[in-house]
Image 1 (tube, rainbow, N blue to C red):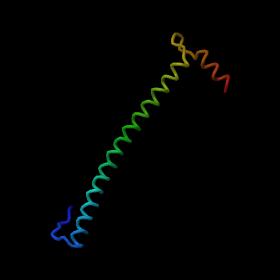
Image 2: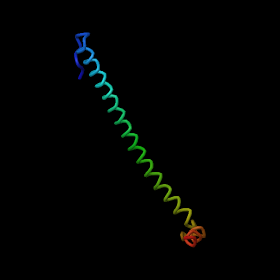
Image 3: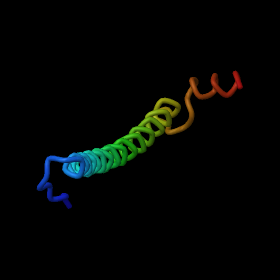
Image 4: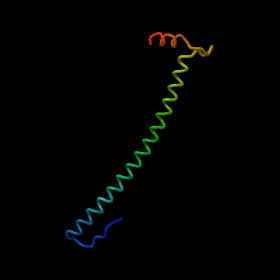
Length: 80
């Protein structure tokens, strides 16, 4: 909502300032919403990447032919 400005005195200046603040607030709220949407997308991408990395780690530790743990898995367990 905008303030109608019909004067050039202090009240007019105040009205202009209020209109500018309202406009800035609307821009800030739109930017915040956009950042929230981007943050949600980033969270989803991060979860997907984490899941893919876990699956890749399992594949690296497993022998493809026998489907049992391989030498690398054994070596890592010994180090712990």
